[in-house]
Length: 445
Image (cartoon, rainbow, N blue to C red; front, side, top):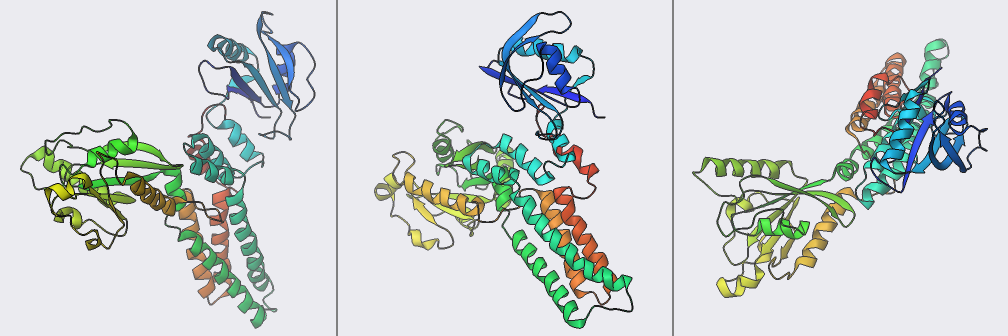
């Protein structure tokens, strides 16, 4: 019999309401002991005076909900106490529960882990729950909610079910050597393997959009000194995140700001001005800027529209770059404006950070570029490296199975493919993964 666990499931600190959750075989008896009354009707909030069973002191006047297993989140008997969110109230209840025999404080993610072990959810749904809790933007919320509701698990289970059916034909030919698979049926089976392999290949070829949305799109602002990179970062973050100075080389290190860009999560990095320098610190800053340009999902190359184009920055422009011509308010007074069409590899935006001219158009171009790399599609997308790794293993096994000359070899590779998909949803033994997956949960979930 499993232990009964308890934890604060709402955020710690002063609040109007706090939720304390219990799960396990002693949950119902504990509620009866702390309320000195019979269990309330299932799934109905009932006003309850909570008492310390040992001292008889009143702890709070709140609401209690009773969820008998298996019709609960964890599949076990569950109790939720909705109490006043004062720090002293919560502390007194948790202390009294901690003294009660048969109860212990839950570990991070233990409620959701029990839901998985009880078969209430699969691993992809469990990961969707933590992503939903961690979601900072609307797009992240929508992706996490879709996964928590089982969309990704249903896709992978569908492939797994089809593969098991194909595997059965090879298993039959192995068990009944005298009755080999008819040639026409064998051809259909191999066509079925290739069809699933192609579907998985298309699923893998997603430009990491789900992972980018979950983790945030990394954007690097690049350019020569004094073109307005730090000013642009401050404009995007709507605060003085970076020092702005007329002195060249002010930015020596990478300055990062995490933003919600119209519902999409982005991390924008201001970098050191790109130029040759005899100063060791500035040279290191330039090295870091180039390294950030290499690793970024998207680059913003900033030029001073009133000056000649910087060749070092020009060399970094590719299809993952947005070009910004800053200081458009000075261009006509200082120097002839270079042709925007001269940079055809990337979208270009003339702006003035100082006056705000062109900024709205630039923000729309930036938002569209981020959305193109992260936006939700009709089918669920890969959200974690472990999913991608298992899917690649599955695809490789299917390619071998389709090319195998012997039924035994094809069957073994199909088994490997089925197990690879099962590792994603948890339908095969994944005990070694559980600690890694659930350690990122908060206590109480």
